[in-house]
Image 1: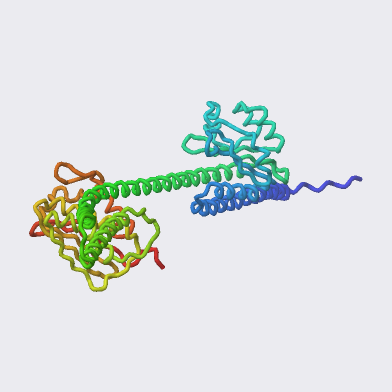
Image 2: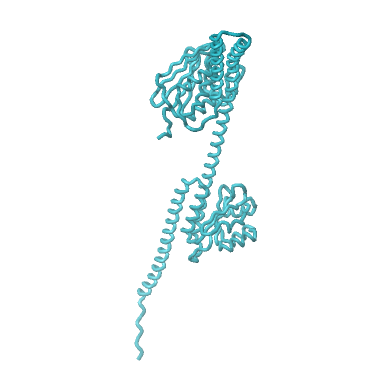
Amino acid sequence: MMAELEPTNPSHSEDLANIEIMTEQLGELSENNRRLRRKIFDLYTVFEISRHLSSMLDTDTLIDAILLTCLGQMGVESAAIITAGPDSPLLNKVYAKGIDPVSLSDIAIDPRNPQIDSIIRNGKPLTINQFEELFDVNKCILAILRQYNVNLIVPLTMKNRLLGLLFLPAKISGAEYHENDIEFLSLLMNQLSVALENSNLYVREREARRELEHTQQLLIVSEKMAALGKLSASIAHEVNNPLGIISNYLQILSNRKLPDDVYANYINILKEEVKRIAGIVRQLLDFYRPQQEEIDQVDLKCVIAESLALMSNQLSNADIDVNLDLPNKMPIIPGSPEKLKQVFLNLLMNSRDFMPSGGQIDVSAKINGNNINIEFSDNGPGIPKEIISKVFEPFFTTKPGREGSGLGLSVCYGIIQWHQGNIVVRNNPRGGATFIITLPLKRADET
């Protein structure tokens, strides 16, 4: 007699079904957890890379950092980025890790090709097959990419412009590139494009600054030559006087027989006049000496004295007296004696030009904390209040008849700024103007 079958327990079947569902859910949770951990890791990596890229300004260093990140993060043996070269609009400059860049040197892609728009619009990494479909790639280029097992191509774009392409081979593990990989690489290229743009802006700003500094130096030289022309005209008169004396005494010596003591006296006079000419020429040569860019030690008392000596004849002829009020011990400061002499001469010439009927110039100096203030004050007509704020602007002149280049005070301002100082002008209550130069006793970059 057959044994009776035990009835099926419905609750047992339900438990098995629930276990299967829970197992599936646990598997999904585990996979989601793995993906979440991977995404967190990728985001952290992008964050760290972004932080480091923000401090890098050299293109080679930026791209090397990205390539090394790709090697470690994607698990590939090699990686390469192709960008535009310095002298070509084509994408033909190769950066590579794990592969010889020379082997990819025959690749040249024109980003201006209309078909590139499809790559830019897509904005996502492409497989080699997608790349071939979207872009009519030169067969030679395609052969090179396939030879090196290029599996994924990631565009590097900025403002609808293709800046470059990242080439990645198949993974060492043989695994496919997943959605997380694609998202990570897209973020990485976005960060690189921003960093490269910042690098380019820095380079352009640096070049513009160099060009500005060069232009400022040309202005300084130009204004110095203009001042030199004015000085030369005055010095020609100064040299002419001793030359006339020398000529007269030589004529006396050649036409007459003189007692020995008189003869010796005349010879001494000739020597003194020759020394006088030599001194005038030496002053002119000192002023003409090429500018020094190096920081030197400046004896301000000496520079002021030399400037006044160069202008003494001109000021005397213009019936202008100079009142000098300097400390007994003037400090030695860092700077350029020639440049400061140019500033002082320019201020003295300005005062002379505005006092055609004569007057007085007061030159004074006073130590004020970590600075020294040097003032050039005259009792001329002063500067109209509506234009006093413009006197340091390039090409602005207040001289009678619009004489002058309008660069003198602008150049003076640039020279004082180069010395890490400041120059301002104010009108005097009783007439005339005062230029106040503030110079540091030590430069800010001195340790």
